[in-house]
Amino acid sequence: MRINCIVVDDEPASRDILEKYISDCPAINLICCCRNAMEASGILNKEDIQLIFLDINMPKISGLKFYKSLTNPPYVIFTTAYPEYAVEGFEVDAIDYLLKPFPFERFLKAVNKALDKFNSIKQETRQNAFILFKSDKKLYRVVLDEINYLEALGDYVRIYYQDKSILVHETFQNIFGQLPEKEFVRVHKSFAIAFNKLEVIEGNMIKIKGKSIPIGQTYRAEFLNLVKSRG
Image 1 (cartoon, rainbow, N blue to C red):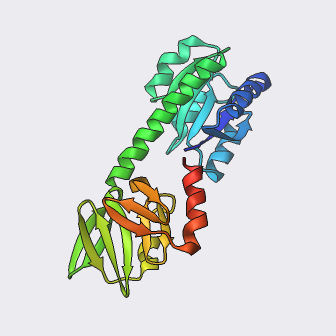
Image 2: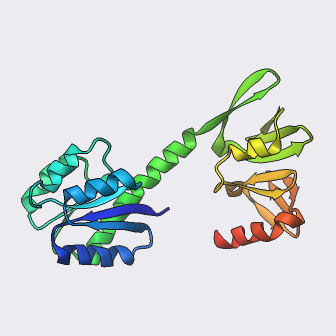
Image 3: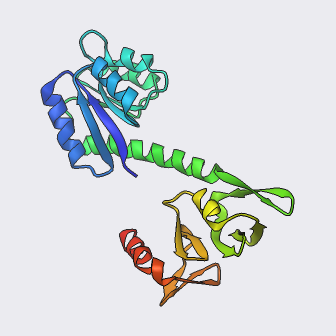
């Protein structure tokens, strides 16, 4: 995953250093460099920002006061030349605190802390995500992470999850459209699979949980390109 970030610092040299460090780190995406809190507020209102590199000692309003004023603040890595601010910085659950001047290795350590935080949140959210499906006049709670594949059967779709399956009276396209597009891929007019459950590709067949699933000619090229891109 890539994290959208902004830099907020009134010193041009500090902004330049962070911009260079971020450009060398493919895990994070720099949206904007801001000179003060007001500029940062404008960006936060318009963009989806997950992380701020925030200087503490700035004119008019300090980075700490600005951060505390935010209603739903992104995660923050504070940057400053003044070590006495470190304790207060961690009181607002900062990811890290970088004391200027800091080398790239120290910057990268802070970024890795942020990535660990985001990955743990993403994993927790992913494990709890579910969809309700109606089958046999009952509602079934199916956890997304447990779905193996879907099979179209006329006006019905069979959903295979864990070691079970349910038959849902719904169009294949409607069911498939409810699933996260980056995690589920259509491989045939009658089949879609959970990409992370893929076990074997052999010729024009895929194996998942001992089931052989055909790869349709229409979907083959796009599917194989996806496999290569994630390999």
